[in-house]
Image (cartoon, rainbow, N blue to C red):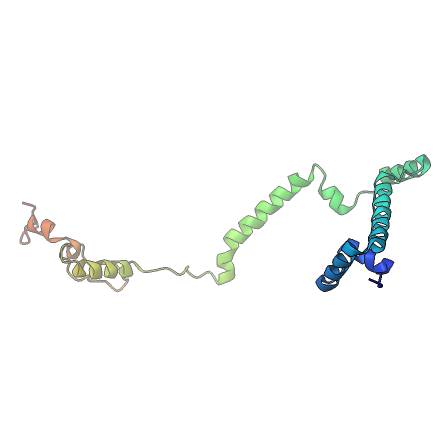
Length: 176
């Protein structure tokens, strides 16, 4: 082959920065071209040498610079955030958090207008029980519920099943 790849393309090949088609073309060319393979090996050796020297190189500051930095750190005034992180910080932060939690817990009815919380009336559950009891052929026979104006059941006798009703004397209310 007469065409050889330039140094920039070989560096991009070593770093994996080529598109797949170009990468494949360079790979096949390097298998047959000893000159380009040697150029690639030189570039790889240079990259390895640079990485090795960068790892071994330790930057050491002069002792006078280190002393000045430590002196500045020691004489620096703490910020508000640093003072809050001090040992007294939790002694102040915990009671404040407790007050906020209590205000959120007890303050929500005030924010809602002080009304009663939404709920389900007991009559709903009684009606559901009656509907299920009347649909079950093996269940107790339950009469319809009678409610007062406030939604409570008017009498408990309507919820007595047939087995219990047989033991009651309806005329005088005595149990037999």
